[in-house]
Length: 402
Ligand SMILES: Cc1cc2nc3c(=O)[nH]c(=O)nc-3n(C[C@H](O)[C@H](O)[C@H](O)COP(=O)(O)OP(=O)(O)OC[C@H]3O[C@@H](n4cnc5c(N)ncnc54)[C@H](O)[C@@H]3O)c2cc1C
Image (cartoon, rainbow, N blue to C red; front, side, top):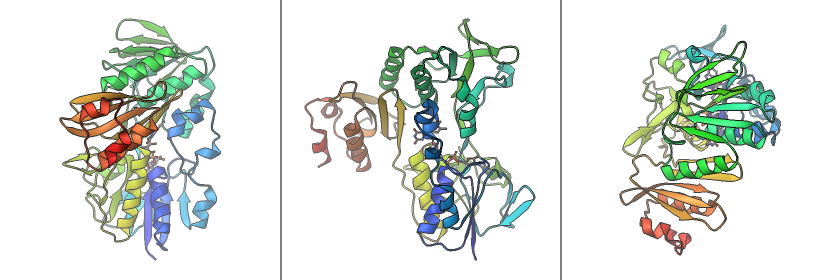
């Protein structure tokens, strides 16, 4: 009986193993996860779950019985420490398991503030796992001072939750503006105004110098010379693909685990998908940190593990929820040199359309599902309406799809 092992019981691992069964694979499947809980959704960790709007049960992608019913051996609280691609085995504690095909869906790990600037103090949190949220939940008390380090989506979502719960929120961003790495100034401006209107103190172009306190963090010194009293700190300063296993097995790395267009790594019986994997995209290679990518890539890998020869063609999209604003992003804006704004019908609805010369690359749509959907379809179809057509409020967006 062939045995497929999947290391990493997160979004991609859950999708991959479920897809194998949907495709009719009746061999053995083992899904191994370091966390003690079955695969769950991470997006609510910085949104509804953190706010207290969503129960723990609803986070789980499938009930535990699903894995039993599908004959997927779920090994939780189990860390794989080595892979031997020649012997085709993985080591997990005292167990050595043999595989016929192996997939790495190990995700990514958050970057921690260095201990040298106080990052190891009590009261300093990251937002990646359910355990991280459990550890910080009791800190969310109205009137407390929270410092958020990093103005990317995770930091901004945490700021929105903290502000909604009545905390005093300061967010520091070392770059000139929030969202600088991922969005145009127009989108940064939109979210700065939104947060400021909810009382969040956004400090840009300023870094964290150090955190201090006796038993736990009480003060934060910023690089502009100011010191803030803090009750706790949340960091959202980026993630790194979890590649250490792949590295020790001598797999090729390149901004994550290097895979070909089919999801195969440099070792013939080892595959990778999700946050940990980089793959060919148009004329370049990319790595995406998103749920849709984890699902779609994992499903293509499942097909290819069973002998299909399917190319993974990513159609990037992402979302973020902050206060009552839903941001939806279609496409990838890398290389943009022009951005046009389109006002939506509803109050606060707006979209930013990214172009590289005449080519439409991406759309950021705030409370404008229509602009998002039409933008996504245009990008996927390779259609690029002229920028002034998009910004003209009289343009019927739907007509552009014809
Ligand atoms: C707070 C937060 C909010 C987010 N919001 C959004 C959003 O709004 N929209 C969106 O599209 N995406 C969002 N994301 C990103 C999205 O959740 C990830 O891209 C997605 O979870 C990636 O799936 P994955 O399976 O690759 O990795 P993960 O879901 O991280 O799963 C990887 C698993 O592998 C396990 N693992 C690693 N190494 C080993 C080992 N050696 N042995 C055993 N197990 C191992 C890890 O413990 C982990 O459980 C968010 C992420 C976070 C943290």
